[in-house]
Length: 232
Image (cartoon, helix red, strand yellow):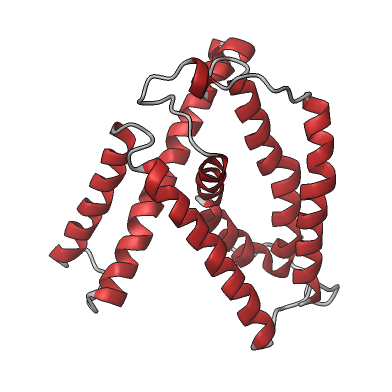
């Protein structure tokens, strides 16, 4: 539990202290965002700040189910420390910087920004990396909820021979496809904020459950140090 609390303290301190430093370093201005200057009703649509915040939270948390458990399995309780540090020094700063640079370049996507500032060769390499990452993320976002729905709701085995599994996969994939093709405020702007709020709610419930039930969490110590010997 102590290791877990230390990780939370690192995350909280970094979010406030280091976050303010990055904000001053970048030099935030009150310029009009591309959603206003280039408003087209499809990709550039002004939305309320709370909606944007929850949508961005959901996007950030998207890879959590992929990378978090992997680090926990490989490195044990060390993940309680490495994940918050990684979020502060890499994940959060990267998201913030890319977002602000995009705002200062009329809302260009990161692929165009990489090509403009780092060159065509780096852009090609980055494009391949992004495709692989999106493939991994897309498979996880279809596979995980699909299997959970089959087991928890339909009470069936989530195996490839089950035809209903493919039907559920198809429905989830179709939803993602429609949400991508329609204007951003039609589905993403309406549904994603509630999913983001649900993530916060479930995280708080899990946090309270850990303390109320006094769940045993492995501590990081010299006797069980796993950081130097990952278990594959």
